[in-house]
Length: 174
Image (tube, rainbow, N blue to C red; front, side, top):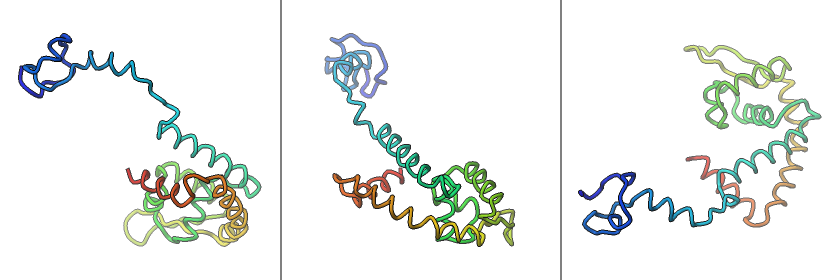
C-alpha cells in the first residue's frame, strides 16, 4: 500500500500498526481511540465566544432600551460618529455586520430620524451620515456607555481587560 493513502480506508488493527502500510492512520481505529478521550466542551472557544457575545449584547440592549436603540444600532451610530460618510459596504466591513443586517438597521434608524442616506457622487453606492438628532443621541448615550464599559472591565479580572480585547480582536481576524 502506498504512503499517503486516505485515512478513511478500512484496515484491520494489525494492518494499521504494520509499517509496511505506511504512516497513514485508520480512521475507524482512531475513532474508537478518540472516543475514549474525554472532550471538555465547556472549554470550546466557539461556544464561549458566542455565549459571551450574547450576554454582553443582552446587557447592552437592556442598558440602551431607554434610548430607543439596540446594541447593534448603537454600534452603527457610534461608527458613523467616528467615521462619517461611509458607504454601506464600508460600514458593514468595519463593524463585522452582514450588509443586509446593516441595511435593515439603517432603514430603522433613518425612520427614527437618526441617520440620513444619500447616493454617492459616483457609482451606485449609498453614503450614510448621522443626522443632527443622531449626533445628539450619541452624546446622550456616551455617559451610559462609559459606565457599562467600566462595569465590563471590572468583570474581567483574569485575563485583564486589555488582554481579553486583544485576544478577541485577534480572533476576529480569522
